[in-house]
Length: 191
Image (cartoon, rainbow, N blue to C red; front, side, top):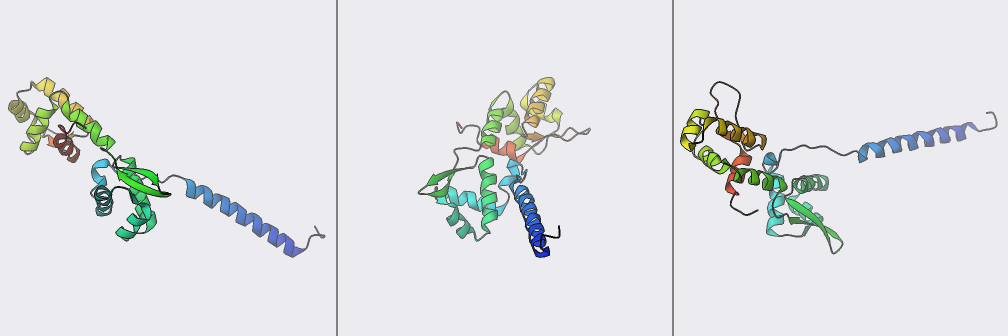
């Protein structure tokens, strides 16, 4: 121990500490960031909506141009674009050496709920829910002419798909969700 100069020990210990911290920091930064934003709420944010609108108007915009036009920090723009991509609104392609963004044909989640909105008595039930303001189960049954047991099964299926909400309670009021309205509007789009 006496043969090694003190300065060399300090430099070695400092280097070891730096490498350890660097390794831990790089490991932490590589962990995925989990942002679980429901698809219905994704487009409520004005910055995400603006990005989607820009890409729909001018498909193939490079990332740098989107970041410049939004005047947002590049990391935020990248995160918002990835959220839109994950939800199926946008697709990313390489074009002329740049990462460019294009609108997807239809969001995967919208395709799924739209299919749910087309099957069984769903079109009839959703139409009544669009027209009526939170009818009770009994009123909905009378308006649609669907027997109560069949209506209960249909409502359960639509609730699981996220197209309606039916709070627990004695009134049994049924409301259409934002996703239900969107799926009902797109039910005939052939998507």
